[in-house]
Image (cartoon, rainbow, N blue to C red; front, side):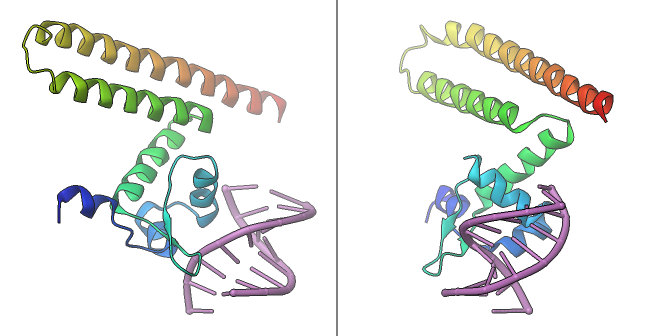
Length: 135
DNA sequence: ATTCTTACA
DNA sequence: TGTAAGAA
């Protein structure tokens, strides 16, 4: 059994995940509803989370704590997958002709990530300011 | 005893 | 997001 299987193997019920992540069941289900996680289901419709799901939830929690809203988290995780697949495809290039580009693109991706983070952070700060202002 | 869905505050 | 109700 590969290491990947162990990461994606459906293992724990929502109660365990709650204590593991300090997120409420409500939040966990809500994030699933919005496509941020895809826990498996048992024959009796119980959610079963993998280590991968838990790690994802922890990342989500960090972003939430930083004030990023769900839309922002979605974008960041989408961006992350783009970076991941780009790295993967470049890794599979047999020639080192592209190794040069890889380096530039790596910096470009990092720049985009930072830019994205800054943009989303500003957006969520506005959200925070507004809710304070209108309360 | 736990978790699920749905609905309301 | 929290919480409640009723079902599984």
